[in-house]
Length: 194
Image 1 (cartoon, one colour):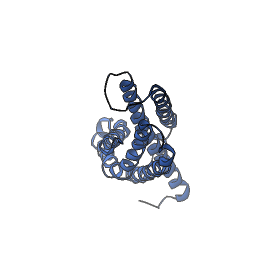
Image 2: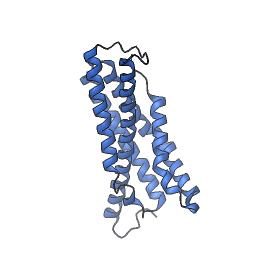
Image 3: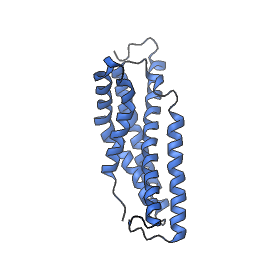
Image 4: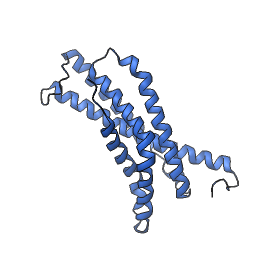
């Protein structure tokens, strides 16, 4: 039952911190994957393997590729380092409370990503198209975190955990399910700037 713990402030603070960290880790993994994919697309376009009609000069191509690849690697690094202990810190909490915490955490992270994308838009106004596309990845991941993750991914993760709990496999699929839904939603929401 919610609110019946003897030390509710400490109890729910730990729950909120653990679920927020987990949502941040998965969100950064989504952004890192998207931006690294974008860097790969820029590389293939620059080498002439594919034609994305970016029409970049050699200097713009190299600068865009380098900066975007570093940003993607940074996001993946944050996601990989932050995972230690985040999911385990809420392992002893009731599944219903973790479900609510993950939904709220994804909404907060999604809002953070969407606000960051809107605040960064003036800074990339005069930069080449790949920077606008990277910002669009951030915006799309933010909207997905605000809407799709709490409504689809978190309930799916909860269902997988309970459906496969008897064979001891459901807990391992929770975060991959949230990641997969978040990535797919981001891809669906992504619009290549033009």
